[in-house]
Length: 637
Image (cartoon, rainbow, N blue to C red):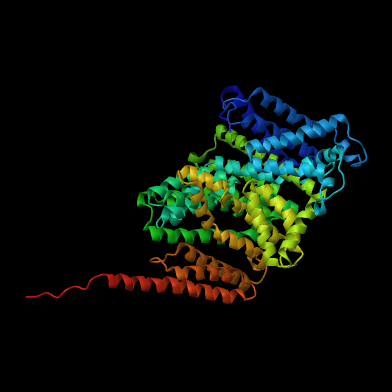
């Protein structure tokens, strides 16, 4: 991103702040009709991308070029046309009423500019993928077999992407980005701008700083809490990792391991209720499930994910001989209470949603509560500058999410208006061969592969469009559980090598090898992979069932994950033999996921084996140590 200076910086900052204010106003006082809302959203969100992000590494870093200004102006015009002429969308028949030359030009311009904005601000992989879907629409009539679809002339492709009601650039996904996503992005920006990070840091230090591996456990807690507000795993790494990674290195953690711990913990923030990432908000709208139901269903999985990281950190720290934080660096209970008023907005958010208020209205009042509650204590007063900076930060994030989701809207338009969706689902279904487990593995692999180059939200949207209906055919899991499964793997792709955005960011801070850091992050995130698959096989994971089933499921999955952690770390009170580690990995997976055996029996077996490994190992290594000490010799006169 450019480091702007002077009047240009101020002008763009004001534009971003206005973008956040407009969306915040709509959240509290009512949205315009969907098409006008989507057009306003893209009018405000797309142009700044060309001013904030350079086209090439050699482009000016302190100011936009003339071409950037021209592209920003052009990006404004197609959405302005839709805003001024909504009847062209509402009153015409797609593919029958012809497009004017002006509309053809505007459709082409905005489509190309969205591709370029995505390339600059997010990922060249997503830009290329979107371009390939558009190319497919032009050549689908030339392709053989399952890839064939009827001829789509240029004007029909433009129609699908620009003027067809509910499709393409101004479709449902853009509307979701302009409503619930924007509302929570403003809320998250105000939480960060208010200084809530001090509360998270003190909670982590107070809760875990005095135990084995204290600095890493503080990192896990702080990153999980902060990740709820950032909405981006990379942003989470950059903000919290700049503090936690040097601290972990200073107290003895190797640089790649310190970066891996931070990356895995930061990624989990996007699945941690009550404020999950943008993909969760999209999910709520896509499957028409109240957002409150989503955060309830996701709660146990998030806790299990972080519990797995905690266990992994604990045994890594034991292996490395790393103890607690120095006493002077551990926060006291008074330090926690000093900033506890920052919890008020989260309480208001959850309470309003529990009372049946819409997520938008809950986010609106919770954002106001952030500002008001900051004045409870003198040290936390939000100044006018902090408010302005929070609005600018929110506006910038809205712009990035908007172009990502709009690109996903282009892809879904191509999938649903051609034979492309049927082609992909047919191929995956054929490869699965009627096996649900193989189907789940294939969809998870697709999501991880797609997420290596595509941001979390588009990766979730695309994979859910292709894979969710296939799993739903087996009638073994609810639609919510299926989409949570896809969400988990879309999120965890940020920590999965060889291309892992969060791991790369952590490696840069740790000054470590990115591949090694990604490998450690991948191992730390093992619990997330297990939990993601468990959403398909264990309905009690989403609190559907009796309390006995829910508790048994939590114990079975956690026990299985702990066995897997013991297997890949290979250490309790000493190094475990290799012949024990491989069976622990396999048995852990069975205890966590083998649904034919009741969860209660799997939980008992898992924790019995954990106890046997830990306490048996403690006895074994203790005896071995005592045998290695020479017996004292008798004194002679």
